Image 1: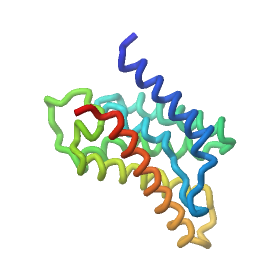
Image 2 (image 1 turned 90 degrees about the vertical axis):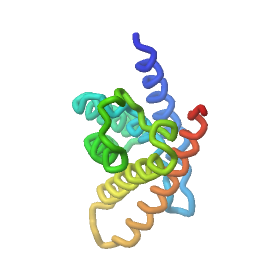
Image 3 (image 1 turned 30 degrees about the vertical axis):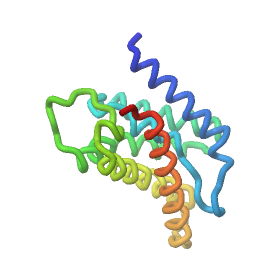
Amino acid sequence: MNKSVISYTILFVILVLIQALLMNHIVLFDSAVCFIFIYFLIKLPIDISANLCLTLGFFLGLSVDILSDTPGLNALCCTLLASLKRPVYFAYEQHDDQKRNVAPSIGTMGILNFCKYAFSMSAIYCLLAFFVEFIEFTDVVGILIKAGASTLFTFLMMLAIDSLLYKN
């Protein structure tokens, strides 16, 4: 078995468990929730096939849904996020045929581009999650505040994790 497959499997399990056991119970200022498990989707290599990326995104969301008792919310949001991974990445990085199997990180993208990429992915996920969770659009400002606070919280946690994993 490939070494990267094992490391991604371990990352998957650890992030799902951290989300279900810890992060779902931490809410800052009664509005900010950290969705740390989407870091797995962000770290997947760019050259991964679209079908595999969508499947992994669905199973990531489904795993969190099962452990968090949120029927289908995270599966939907993760599947959409997986489908938008490549377009968001290439909005900040140039197409380069010499870069193969590149996993987005501070080391491969640089700090500024990785921050833009991670923040965009966090914002997409949080906006979708809160708009799906609060189906009615009567309190759009409240939804935007919760999504914005959660985006910032998630982004900062992902940046901290990537900084710890990045080796100079």
